[in-house]
Length: 213
Image 1: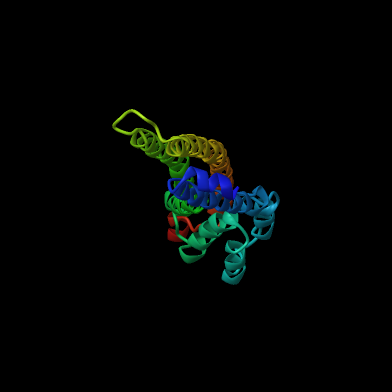
Image 2 (image 1 turned 45 degrees about the vertical axis):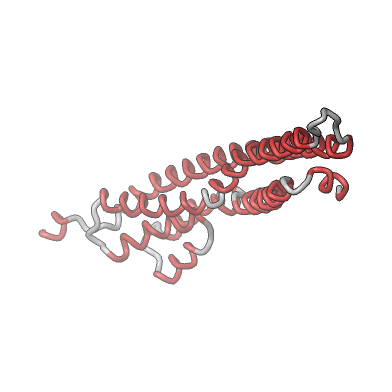
């Protein structure tokens, strides 16, 4: 491996940095975007069961928010009803939407960086190719005689950097697309859970007509 790096020249060092960052991001996102960590399967049913007759206390809601991303969204709706018993359905939906946007930002963290690496790695490989070609042409003497050692080094720089750029870009792009689809799937699950909880929480909201009577 060290001999390949030496043969590829200095343009390979940015590619090595990109490969390390890309690998770290892929491992972090694989751990962070697990379904059990984002959408625990029984959490919504447990929340509905706990709040069937009355709203839970704020400390219980805070523990729910620490449970998962779904818990954060559900806790936002519960807090909205607890803080404002006269809340309207549109206001409750707005609180869920705000929590959903925060959840989306959390789920999409680092994906732009991974996508940038997938796009930039081939360009960095192309840069190495251009540098190698410059060395190849620079090895040509004015008399027409070529320096075999410089010619071989230029070819190595050109080919190794091109190959290494593609080796980084292809898996990074595949994982980027996979994570984007996973995030969209999780966001759909969060939206469906919020839609299911809205009518349940509106049972505890005080209607203006009821208050007037």
